Length: 286
Image 1: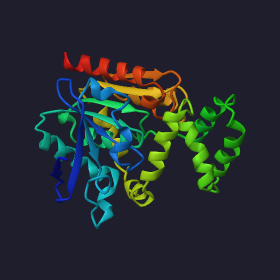
Image 2 (image 1 turned 90 degrees about the vertical axis):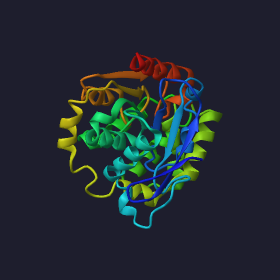
Image 3 (image 1 turned 45 degrees about the horizontal axis):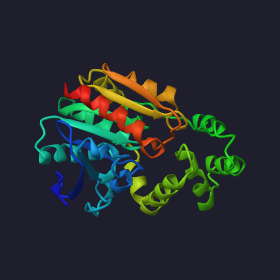
């Protein structure tokens, strides 16, 4: 397991998976603050493209610092820069899933000259001042009216919105993260639940994390790098039109909607996911 030191000497770990591509794709996990193991090989992407899966500070095999203020999303951009240096890359291809979209965008806003490409998968964009409202999640819920579990999930959703949900409610709501609640989805959801760290997640989103949104957005509007924004047709955070808004931030942004997918598209439709990402990276390599 390779490691490197962050600027504050926190020892961070990453995992290599697969081979192929002109250079590795550095993958940043969401959650927020989930260990990178939940990404797996991204639905078989590792068979076509070398993946470098970063364990963020305090997660997985990375050291957990005593001072958790360094976990705030904007402050972790320097960890990705330290990883780029450790990998010996002049510029980096970055993939961020879900809440990691905030971190990948923070990196791109701080080190735009070091970005070769971005892949944003069902990704947040609060770093750029774009948030996804709970009403949009309710819209996505209504797309699942024909599911056998819909009548159970609807009241669980409302309890979550009002802050009254319990663990059983959140277990039910996991189903909305997948296009199909099959064995693969259930296994993935169970692993994510096991690795959830509430304290680290709170530190990631600590007050001040997005205070520089206007300045970040201005930098991203001039980013000279191709950007793929991939959303799931059934996802509530983001809904596809919100993901399109994120893609429009960038001069070279493109948006792809994966049919039948929710928040984890490599689980819902691995072949389509791999085809979309490898096609994008092949254009970057040309």
